[in-house]
Length: 570
Image (cartoon, rainbow, N blue to C red):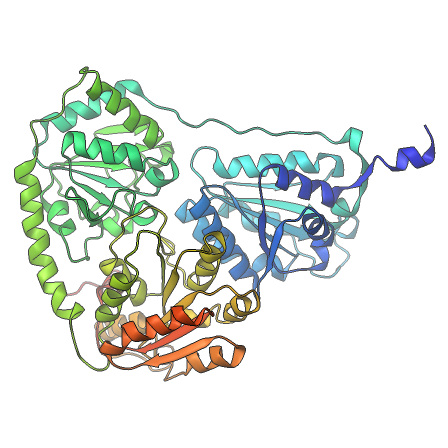
């Protein structure tokens, strides 16, 4: 073999990693360029992958998380070594608690540069290992495709979540013989189901008089919407949805009672206190339920989760079922359709009871939703945004402390994947990155992010990213001129808020956006909210709608925060 022919078989390892990603169908990567990722970056660009460069690594990884949530496949982010890596940690923590499929690829100093005080040298692996499903480091360039495959499939096997892949820069730069490269591609099947437990679940429902189903992110990631709708209608069991499960069945269905959020205007509080059977479908017993303390203590529990570690967290479970949610529901439907199991006698009186409780609670919320006060009541803003973004293809993102809570209380979800928020981790700054990623995935859909004026400061420069890339998202700022949730929780706990750390002031955010080439508008009266939204979407530009809301209104989120450290409200 001639030297020329032999050289044709040599290939750059970073390009092989890019090849492995595209073979998995990856066509978008979010990143900030850095010297420790040049080989992979070049390979991705040559493969035609859409590369979106952000202004901060945190935003890049949040965008990848949103991409993963919406596609149910790993979103991919790439960061450079050291500070690029550390800037990515908050989104990784958020993705882990939200069960978002996310692949973070980071460069690191070369193997030959370790302990030489090289540029951005840092031991990264032990920092991130506790935060991800699994962390991989590839030391052999000929195995780089194998490591990409392992990392990708780990994201989506079992319970989805973030995975870390570290590629030393000299490994990426190495040239290897293609014949020595291991080609791996495995997609594990995780549709496990316990058929015997399906029979027991139907028996529990048959004995119950006041059952409810709580469907969460696990139901969403198993793509169980169709099965859940059929099961709900065949059995007559009322359903509440949570987190990424919002919209899995439409809130407008007569048997769906919207969000399983006890502070929301609706029937959830009544159900939590009075149901005699809770069926949790991919829904964790977390802070939203007082870590299990807010449920009726006399109720029975059935919990379905693909992760056995979640079965029995914070509450004794009478029927724990380790199963994929969709597979379990399919089994239950087959039992019902073949007559091998019969549904209960019906729960019409229980459903009527929930409807009555819902109507009474929503009547109280309507007072604030229709408030004409100036400054604008924050719930009026949330209600207006909810009504405006009412198409089944509209995507709404919420970000902030009180702002996210107000929006969660108001949002009517009619389709899965159309409402996004940070989740249990409760971190700020997800809004603008999530919105940009959603608009990139669905360019023909309207995308709006409602965000607090505190949160908007975290990734404000991603407005420039949207303007530069002509991604017309609409960002509505709930501007109460401060850190509202902190301000009001301090008032509860300390008697008064501390100025430093709670006050921001009247900032003209819309003018900053106009200066960068976007659309900006300020709103001070509730009647001007909808015309401002019309103008923002009509502009065809990334838009900032700066809405001045009442800083004196205390939200339920602030009350909950005041109790975090054990403080009790008398």
